[in-house]
Image (tube, rainbow, N blue to C red; front, top):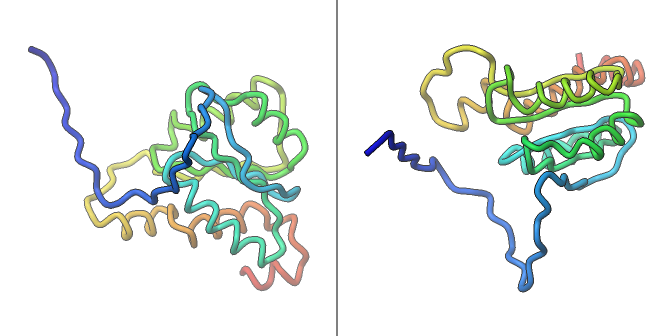
Length: 171
């Protein structure tokens, strides 16, 4: 009697171990997964696992990152994001959706409304254009939504903060 949409998932989910007595999630509450003072990485959904893998590669390069599973796009965990953005100068948002009007935009709007200006912000996600068909792996690689793409985005964002020897290695 009205519009209907059927969505079939493509591929397998990462999966997590189920706890015997799972804790209740609080709506709008993010989860800080790692602690670091160089870079703040905020991610949502499937990109959290990708971000954690990128974190491991960045750590080897000497970049200490705080990784946050934001869990919710609406409502954002304002308190957590603001607290971390005030003390960590570089901010990277990572989402597997459109950048315009998406999660990263909401984070930038929140920080702007609170007059918090990190040294640099970079949003990783899908551009505002037609996304052609293709395998998930190919499309994620093309748009920087795989581990190597997130690492590259973090490096580009932090190029001013890295020692000159590291900058030459990244170039």
